[in-house]
Length: 202
Image 1 (cartoon, rainbow, N blue to C red):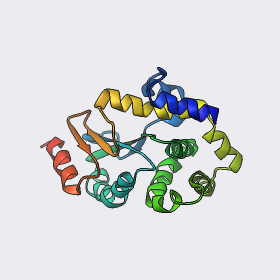
Image 2: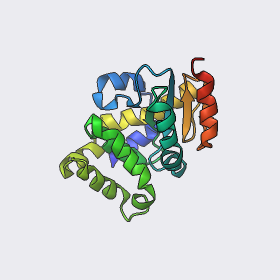
Image 3: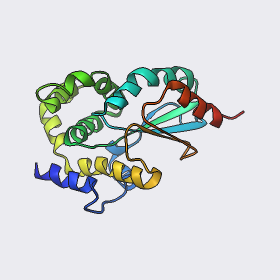
Image 4: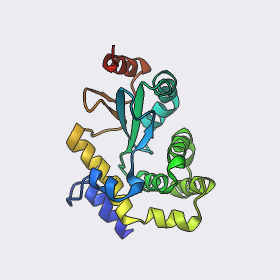
């Protein structure tokens, strides 16, 4: 509990910490969570919280269309970065990061699709830990992950860096081609399409 309180204080800006980019190099678990080809002409960073209902709506309604029209066609690369506003979201993000790389994105997708179920359960984190066990994580591994201070700190740092670099203060927020376009909120698919098409090579 003490560790979690310290990390949440850092989120609020009480203590300077290394940048997320530095943490990414130091801890392989903090590597980018990527969908799409590395050489895609358009890159979109998604900042989202696992406890955010609008983020879940984006993942269930809009993301599948983007995957079909742009990601699978090699036109768009999506980088997922989690923003933790609360203890539940922070520890759920940690569990996702502790899974093998190939299971992280599917696990996150499951959490968004099932959000209304696990988030309203009697013990949301215990339910998320059960999902993690289905993905191959032992109970002891899940406990250790949720109490991993360096990992929790690194995840919390994403929010601070996003605010500093791109003025991201709400979720979901989308930064396209390093700020060439910015979309805030779960906007209609057509708005994403317009922004992406404008940045594709002619």
